[in-house]
Image 1 (tube, rainbow, N blue to C red):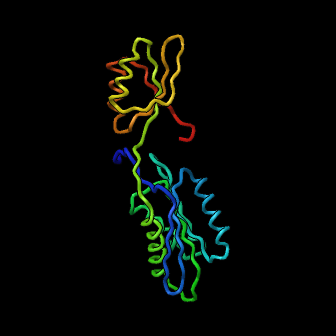
Image 2: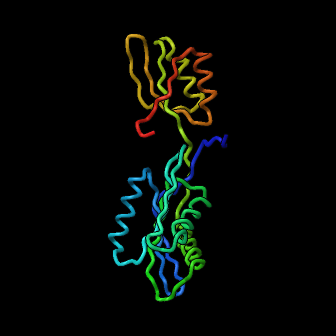
Length: 208
C-alpha cells in the first residue's frame, strides 16, 4: 500500500522559458491545469500560435488523489522529448501541470542524447520561472443531525477546520455539506459518529 497523500503541489500561474542549443531554439511554456481537456486546449492554442514550429512536444500530470501522465514527442525520436519533459514535472513533484516545448530547428542535428538534454533544459526553464504552491486535499461529507445538535456540530467543525459548503433542513433536522482536510478524515469520522452520533456520508463527486 502506497503512502497516503494529504496535499499536492502545482504551479500558481503560467510561465515560459527559452533554451538554445546549436542554433535550435526551444521555447517552453508551463500551465496549471485542472483537467485533461484544459491541457488539450492549451496545446492546441500553442500549435495555432506557433504554427511554423517544427515540433510541439508536451507532457502533463493531471489529478490530485489519482494522477494521469500523458506525453507526446510530436515527431521527435521516441522518448527524446515528451519523456524528459515529463521527468522535469516529476522531479518537482508537481501535478495539474502541463509543459509544452516548441522547437525551431537550427540546421544542426542534436542527436538522441542532445535532444533529451535540450528538452529537459527547456522544460526546466519554464518550471523554474513558475511559483510552486501546495494545496491540502479535502474530502466532502454530508452530515445529518438533529436540530438540538447544532452547537456541538459547530464545535466539531471548528476543531477540524472544516469548511461548510452548504446547509439545509428537513423535518428531521439539519443536512450540511462540509469539506474536511484529508489528514483529519479518519479522526473526524470516528468522532462524528462515536461521540456525536451523526450520520456521516462521503459525497462522491461526479468527476471522480
